[in-house]
Length: 144
Ligand SMILES: Nc1nc2c([nH]c(=O)n2[C@H]2C[C@H](O)[C@@H](COP(=O)(O)OP(=O)(O)OP(=O)(O)O)O2)c(=O)[nH]1
Image 1 (tube, rainbow, N blue to C red):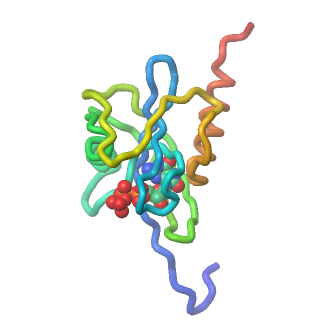
Image 2: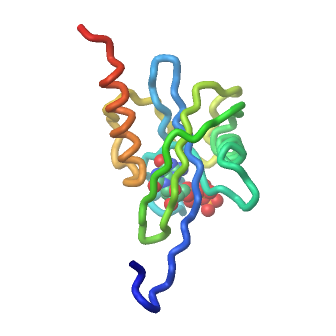
Image 3: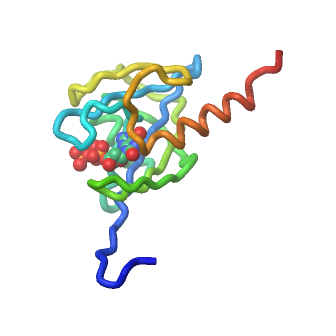
């Protein structure tokens, strides 16, 4: 329940792309200088602007940040995280196909990672999704 007189925090809607390479590696990049949690590893994406669908926002963000173009994206999971700077609602999309060469247009670092990740620190809002991805992989791994 919201306390009487407490300001209601509005969600910031965010589109996030889980780019998955043919060998199952996941793309992570660092948050650019000047943003909250600068230097933390995250999945690429950003805020959904007024009038945009998740897919449109993700396509725009990946072009702006990475210089690649995706054709389609479907929401896989929706999560929320309450940061001091914002209450975010994250719309997670798995992306298996894109066009173009990766270009770090915001000065970020990028890397392809298998699970478990060996980069740190990772944005806290990404941790539940990393756990689901790991569970999914464990349950689909071929039996020995
Ligand atoms: N891109 C991305 N954002 C995430 C992840 N996990 C997570 O909690 N977030 C949060 C951090 C931020 O509060 C928010 C994304 O906002 P942002 O500031 O990066 O978005 P933006 O690029 O549109 O920023 P700007 O235009 O305001 O500079 O979502 C993640 O894995 N990737």
